[in-house]
Amino acid sequence: MKVLYSYNMSTPQNRHTILITGSSSGIGRASAQLFAQKGWNVVATMRSPDKETELNRLEHVLCTRLDVTDASSIAAAIHDGITAFGRIDAVLNNAGYGLTGPFEATTREEIRRQFDTNVFGTLDVIRAILPHFRQNGGGTILNVTSMGGRIALPLYSVYHGTKWAVEGFSESLQHELRPFNIHVKMIEPGAIATAFYDRSMTVAKQSGLTAYDTMVNTTLKRMNASGRSGSAPADVARVIYGAAMDKSWKQRYPAAGNARAILWTRKLLPDILFSALLRLNLMRPRQ
Ligand SMILES: NC(=O)c1ccc[n+]([C@@H]2O[C@H](COP(=O)([O-])OP(=O)(O)OC[C@H]3O[C@@H](n4cnc5c(N)ncnc54)[C@H](OP(=O)(O)O)[C@@H]3O)[C@@H](O)[C@H]2O)c1
Image (cartoon, rainbow, N blue to C red; front, side, top):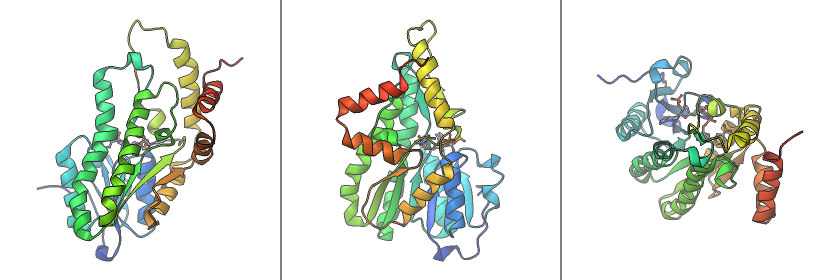
């Protein structure tokens, strides 16, 4: 028998329901907590729900397995959510991680895994929920991209490739889903203090390739240290909640960690000046 890891419901049918990917930590976890607090049913999905000890104690929260690289787990989690709560009104595509380091040191397998998770995982969840949303007469898709879906930092090239891909995809998708009252929104966090900068990060290395060592030891270390002292994931969760409640067709929501200021600067400056400013701040050796 399939195990639904736990849910506790009184009158689930008259509440909105959100399905969240990557609820085990960081932004996904903070969002699951906030939506539950705000009176939503939450399908808090994660790769290892058997390890969860807190979310599964909350009322109206169903913890169930979903690995975005496993299509059958996506279908099963959506099915579990609809069975438990009657319908799903919003999906938060949050699961993801960062592949960093010099591109030259990156293997094809690492690149493939990065795109499988951050891009194909998101697309597979959306494809799986669309029939349900159309049947319901609408729904909201919230894609956690990044301010790095509109700017590009050094030594994050493949990660940026995934986030820029989801941004372009989301902007196009909105055109075709608007007639079905389905909203596609992008949440663009700045630097947020989560496991993203530690256990979730893969740093590409190739033995014998030392040409980038100084850059990795200064720029990447500096950027990741500033990420670790970034904003709290709860700040992003509040922006996500606002976006879920926003019935306008606005698509982009910069979220915390200076994202708004940095994206404005990006808009105002010519490409060449913005890039020079980034290099000056991130790549210049410090005394
Ligand atoms: N932190 C930042 O500064 C920042 C900035 C901009 C955008 N973002 C984006 O925010 C999102 C959440 O990251 P975070 O900062 O909250 O980091 P996090 O705490 O490391 O959370 C990442 C989540 O994604 C899950 N995940 C990874 N691969 C998965 C897969 N194949 N299937 C299902 N879940 C998977 C992880 O699950 P496990 O526990 O199983 O590993 C974890 O729950 C990511 O898309 C990230 O790119 C983060």
